[in-house]
Length: 509
Image 1: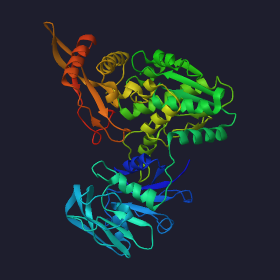
Image 2: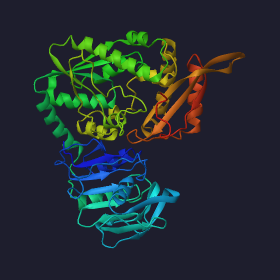
Image 3: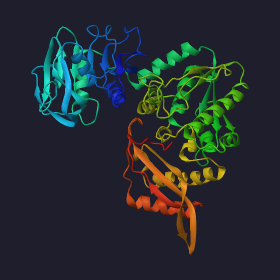
Image 4: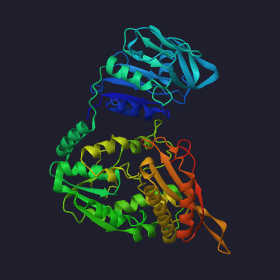
């Protein structure tokens, strides 16, 4: 893998977006915590310092060690990074009279500056900070201003160091991607060679070298990630790949058989294991979301351990882990509170003597799909909505019973099939139904009912890091609500979730 750009994370909600924008330029990049990045920087062509919720003036301000970076590698400091360089290098940072948050427009751009090639004056940028640079650091030259921020951008002479007080990575910065391209391609001379075809070629070669003649077992889910991982591994090691598809009893309606049928003819060696009763038995009485996830993860590993013992000399467990899983499971401040644990990130218990191989762990979701297309995987399969590893367990709020699973499977089936029949499925990034832990009063016929409430969720996104709720047509929602209440026994009320991520998450648990 070509480690071309290093992004240092200071805890900003936008750090992942920087990586997305860099990847869109066909440039490979990686995110590392500011206090725990590789000691060997020789593979990197440039470094980007991200933003942060902290103030550089605070006692708890993150202090990166830039001794091996500054002046030695091209560096772009964004927001907190720009203020950090100013505050600790002879400049001045002070609290703003008002928090500078939201849209602003460049009112001054230094002439003939490569960083702003193709960027017009009055270009819109996105501010998000409560401090502001009042004096530039030593040897710095002002490059741009807005009406309210004099030092919106600057560079340090004698170094390839640039700094900006706004966020080029967010959608609201109109020419943000152009500025990143100018810095990375024209200033830092980073090659734009991170393409799906190049990734496949490089990863297959890497897998061949790493795995040799070893046997690998992979858990297939029917989803995009595990399928692309399987086809990549199959291309590298062929018959030494053993795929296992486990029914945890929490899949979508009829999915176990449908998925097995789907893989026929793909040249994959797949075995189906129906362990639904085992999972549901272990989950009985558990309501806490994290406990559910951990229980499913534990039972999944136990089932895998049982199955892997049936295959002689298996040495590796392959997983479809992707980059957002990795990012969300690592805190910049160390092992502090995480939003939720990811079922497929982390090590295995000691008793399971398998090494882990994760061919997709550096890719975002949309990149996985493009790699899958390069591998010739069916577009319909690549277009499948993401589905959580713990399955419907985290869409059933509260404890799990076979009856609740049946209700949610039926509701989900009506919703998803409805999206497909109305031509809406491909316009939605992810959709599903949530069974709420409340009953509501209703009337069916002339009888009073007291039955379950379900929430429908449909979001649009690129990679799941941020998401907006989809404005599905009212006629569609009316039809689906009516179909669910009429066809699914036990439900008498349907609601639609209109929350975006952030502040909400896509899944409810």
